[in-house]
Image: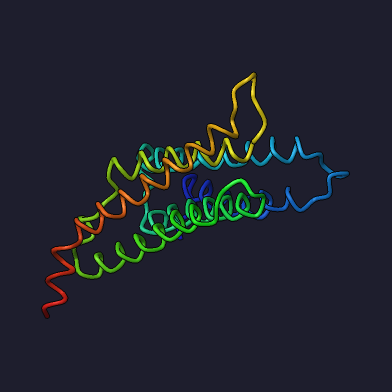
Amino acid sequence: MPLNIPNLLTWFRIVMIPVFLALFYMSDETISLHYKHLFSALLFAFAAITDWLDGYLARRLNQGSAFGAFLDPVADKLMVAAALILLVSLGQVDAIIAFIIIGREIAISALREWMAQLGAGKNIAVSMLGKVKTTFQMIAILFLLYQEPLLGFPTNQVGSFLIYVAALLTLWSMVYYLMLAMPQITKKSRE
């Protein structure tokens, strides 16, 4: 495991997950609800930025590695899953929406692993649709974590709308990836 800046940023995102979750388990006397919302949103925003930054630095500094390519999406999925489960427990997100998003991530990760074993991993590489889905998902979660109006902007209502858009994009991207993999799936089922 190469210890370079991109991998350290990815590890930092993973280590921050318990801190992120612990905020909401602290008493309101220790930290007010306003600061719970603010700090959790800032931590999530930082995680989203470092997700982009570690990939950029890996390419820019020529520090890409197989381990980093494995760890980066794991860190992303863990952070998103933790945030969604937290938001479900807070009543901010419906459980079915969290299930769709988390379930898709697990299914597509398994599909990518299987396709890589078949030597067809490039067939289901990350697409623009996947990136758009991730963008909507991250913005929605950020707004839902913050919850409070920001200079009159209704973050909670916009976040609630965007999480449904993200869920639709999640389903669409899953169908897209399954269709890309279908020739291999069909071929393997005949063997």
